[in-house]
Image (tube, rainbow, N blue to C red):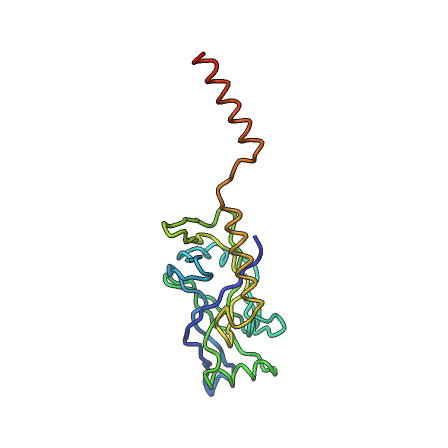
Length: 208
């Protein structure tokens, strides 16, 4: 499975926090919402189950936080000083990232104050056999993610797939791959002919 990207396209209450005694400021909020089904592509719904990331958060690998999902705008990692904090709760994954004293860090700080940044983005991939696919009576696909590996979570300016063509193409390609992987297998023309000949042979044997 390729690495996937998701966003929360609603206000997730991101904010800068700190005190006069602590010059370090942070951006924090909900990075992933659990057990809530959303339509990520027309006719394709997805839900991340609570606990799906539990193993990933304990595997010791480095998790990262980017601004606007851009690896050039890294805010922190779980090995930074101060470090990215991740808190896995029943309803979602919360993150708290220090804001570095850089040009893009200052941009983020100002945009938080102006409430221009109101969403979060995260990247992950689904583990083998970590998804359940069902199709309803209207031919809508429903994907439930039960186990996944988290790579990155952070704030974004435009929390919507439609905000960039890249995000849109990414989701479209992922949905197509999932549908192809889970589509019912159909017999080839040769297999159909072979099965038909076998059926006729059995008929000849028992009826004539």
